[in-house]
Image (tube, rainbow, N blue to C red; front, side, top):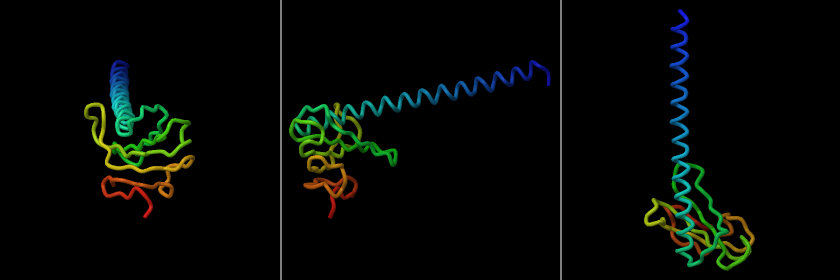
Length: 134
């Protein structure tokens, strides 16, 4: 092999690696933008559902799969996070008119983690899942 063949092979490989990195970067940016859009809609949904415009809400994303299921929890009365009873909503589906659907939710007592054993007054049940202890 002469020098020009080696140079051509190296250049081709570098261009392919660069194209792969560019596509991966665009994919990650697009995905993160979509997730941020969804999370803003989740906060709007919680505010519209509860009639409260709080900004200290906790959002838990479904990290087990590629679903678009989030749980948004916030106090039912003004105060520090988890200082009062919390209302947690399961929010799913696509964004429509700046909001998403709420197939279920539950309440949590003050100062507890969002664990099944503390949930009460559950309503709805997304996709056949039990939201509270039985």
